[in-house]
Amino acid sequence: MKQLSRLLLLLLLTVPSYAFSQNLAQRKADIDALKISIITTKAELTPDEGKAFWPVYNEYEAEKNSIKRERRQKAQEARANIDNLSDKDIDDLLQNDFMLRQRELDIDKKYFEKFKKVLPLKKVAKVYAAEDQFKRELLKRLRDQGD
Image (cartoon, rainbow, N blue to C red; front, side):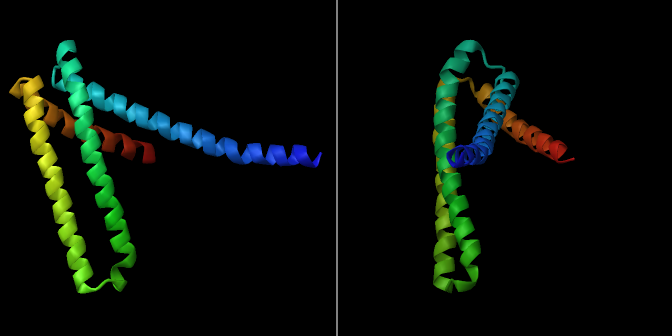
């Protein structure tokens, strides 16, 4: 009986966390689907263009997200320790942030050239506009959920 109680308790503790992680995975999949839909529609990508474009775009996003994670992590660490940092430490943190933002810009430039190899220039411009529209739509949906 004790073992059954422990097993039930273990199940009750793990099922919500499993459901939560599945919910997060589903939300990420929904967000990704929204982004693909908006970019594909607004940039008017043909199926052949999509086949050439999406692998390049996915690489682009992976590189950008890596930098964004690093910036976010360093910013959180800095905020948590700001009162204990010397002026030199703060200067180093800010210089590092400038360097990370420059790397982000370098990635943008690099992939702009790659995008131009797989899409006409007008469609590349439409991709950037569609990204902005996606961000606005995502923020709107998040605000609507909060109400």
